Image (cartoon, rainbow, N blue to C red; front, side, top):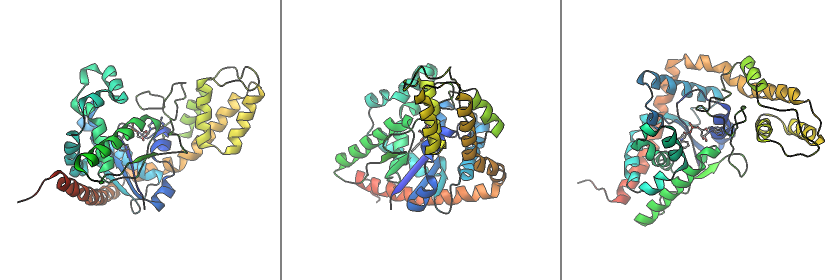
Length: 330
Ligand code: TYM
């Protein structure tokens, strides 16, 4: 049985990108693997969230995880800060992470550019904390979107470095996991590259159908193809990317054919179909969310059991790592 680990930062509601990046095929995945789904609340600290909203954000992601269909009886669902073992392994791995490589990380450079007054040490060592999350359960697979590819690569570097430094074969080489070979990037409807909370272009899983219809209707389009088999501009390719994940193959090939025919004036129909299929995906979860969110007792039980199971797995790893590194008790 393989170990799968998936994580999301509690910085807002879950959107389609999170769903297709981090929760892909979770029903089957939970049945066939040892799965961990966690809320990366320590990761969210790099931007200093308001203490009044931190817990609310964690609760939102937890409720939405459960509303999506994550099953606490099959999987371990936990909050990162409930597992102190992660902090200790993070400290130990930090000693093997070098300034040069951390400074070169794309996400670090981007965040440092966007927020030059908040380049904190946690931001620099963010990839080490993420590697810790993965290695603490010695995960085989990590469902992620394209934006996390480099972090996964760094995790493999740290796993390798640890193994060769101490002459062991302890850590596995965790692999990113998503649709087919390529990691997915769900684009925004505004023609931008990525759907993301900070980009402000998300379709949230909790969006009401009316809102989804409005957002999709507002997606950037033009007059249509400029002839038969012409290349698609990025913003049209984006709509097809989303269509491919939410719709059936028949629907996708119907619109691919329309595009290739060079015909114009069918974007209205495409958008209506896209909205309908997105609503089909999100509705079952939206309908459950409030009941789950209001059931504090259930949420408490899930996180307590989750923390217990996650700590059991994490402390086993930590015990081995301590021993490998030479810590002994008297
Ligand atoms: P976060 O919270 O930004 O995003 C959570 C997951 O959603 C994926 N994702 C996307 N996938 C496809 N298209 C998009 N537009 C899109 N937007 C977000 C992300 O790739 C991610 O899989 N550092 C992580 C959280 C984390 C983590 C981990 C993930 C911490 N430790 C260990 C996996 C394993 C993050 O900020 O994701």
